[in-house]
Image 1: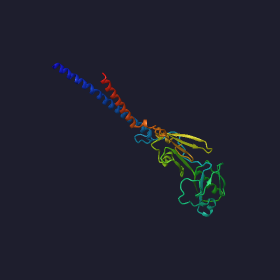
Image 2: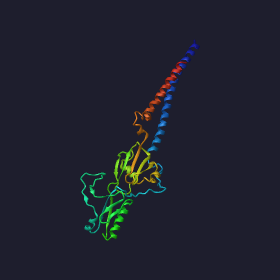
Image 3: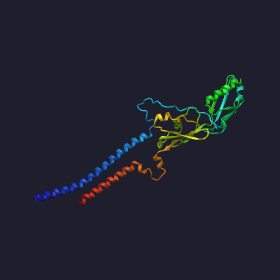
Image 4: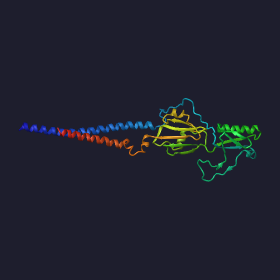
Length: 301
């Protein structure tokens, strides 16, 4: 009887062990699955940081230095640009001959416009010239604001028209456009000579979290309308600083491409398989299935 009791106890212990082992295996599978997912998630987070951080090649607060040929910052005038030219001197009555009439600005009329509100201006003709009072036809296209002001000042002095002229040239209708994954897309006015790509993106509220930093596209039309494309990687200081598109010119188009997540929003449930919750559910389901299969196999023995 003692032997039989011992054997029976051993059998019961074995059955209990057989029942506990599948449960432990199931818990181990779940735990390992979650650990694996956590590891993959952390690796993915590091990868995301590399995709969205600007100027990653600037490290340890070292002063970054640009290399190669520097992009030209000057905005040179083109046909169809509109500019104002104002001449001043000690004798206002004399310089009045060279200034176009001033049209009062309408209250509340702001932003980019081709209207004549404000200072009257000259629209550069297709041949690159304008008709300037007294001086006649003046070649304008290809000049910077400073070069044009210096040229008109020199002509006025050389022809004994004004002895002490002060010539100011301003942009009126020059602009650029920012499109794609930025917070405030739209057209923006160029009111100074040196506007950088960083300035332009800042005006548009910076890239959204869904904008691709590694491939910002700048399309630049020439005077004939032909486009030149420049690709800028905003993650690299050297790439940004040395790009020919670093300084923005009139009529530039800046396009920020959407990332994969944003593009997938155009299809039904395309982003579901990329979410953390989805993969946690998948790992949990697989662990549960593995546990169930293990229990069934044990019971069938």
